[in-house]
Amino acid sequence: MSEFDGVAHRVRVRYCETDRMAVAHHGSYVAWFEEARTEWMRQRGRTYRELEDAGFLLQVVDFTCRYHKPVDYDEVVAIRVRVEDRGRAAIVLGYEARRECDGEICATGHTRLACVGRDGRLRRLPPELAASEVAQ
Image (cartoon, rainbow, N blue to C red):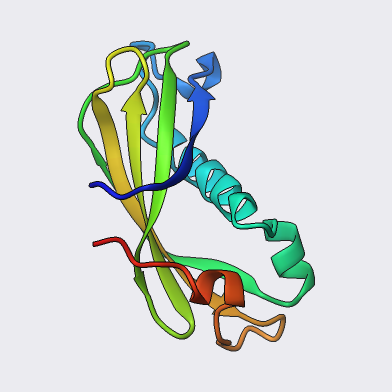
């Protein structure tokens, strides 16, 4: 993956996020990707909370993650986000997680987010997301 937006979101692997081998548990990436997505939104000038307050709810309808290299307790992971696809009411974000100690890719993945209103019905993406460039 390339052409990632903005500054990488950094997370330090906490002990509670590891398994008995002191390696980051696969489920930790769900939360890390969500944190990175939240910060990616903030870099676009509007927080998730502000979007929700305006009636734009982004529901994760698909999540994938491919694990490339292990990450150990107390290591720092840098996660970058990019737009992979965008429609009228949905957006697909790609993620690349790299170990800071050696720059190796430890995981890649994506989420498909559907935009709905408080009534649960699909609605158009907010302007901040509708204008996002799709990575080549």
